[in-house]
Amino acid sequence: MLKFTRGLFVATALSGAVFSAGFVAPAFASESERREATIMVSGEGEATVAPDMAVISLAVVRDADTAGEALTANSAAMAEVLADLKGQGIADKDLQTTDFSIQPKYRQENKPDGTYEAPVIIGYTVSNGLTVRVRDLTKLGAIIDRSVKLGVNQGGGITFTNDDPEATVEAARKQAVEKAAAKAKTLTEAAGVKLGRIVEISENFARPMPQVYAAAPMAKMADESVPIASGENLYTVTVNITYAIEQ
Image 1 (cartoon, rainbow, N blue to C red):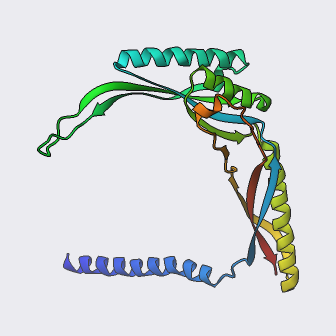
Image 2: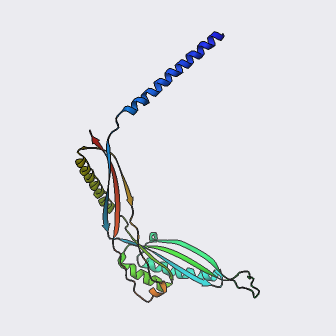
């Protein structure tokens, strides 16, 4: 029995050694294989387009002694603003309430001995924010003017954008690929090698930074026309291409 066990142990150990050697050999061989030579280049494409939509932020803020009174005043003013915007052709899908808050207003005074009294609520502030998408930029100045006169007294930030920029992005993408291919051709010709197949291609697309129009204070706008300059939006696409080098 003892002799059999020893024989089994030796056989197992030897078979393990054979298996390990067989396992290592392929890895050893793969390391000796020649890797494919490649070259990676990048190209950047740009395209501009005039914006066809503006996104503006408006807010109605009202103060009163009680939360109910402040809310009533705020709701009445906002209802007029919404009705007027819809009357000017703004669709329901382009009107969105973005911020709404009811905040107490406090007063705190120091006692003659230098200690603090507990804060006392002296009123409430109700703020109702509205984001508006204006698809007819010729109406933008008038919309701001009318909104202020109807009760909007905060906001005024304007972002110019494009509803569907895909055609502009496509033009930037094609330009990026052309620049990357031209760069690869120049590099390989200078190095005296031949450009091969495309191994990998990828892109990075960054939406343009929004052009923000910093509006004047709302109270001042009510008595002045609002000049608007929309400019252009710049779209940028970067393409990375890896080519094989023919040996």
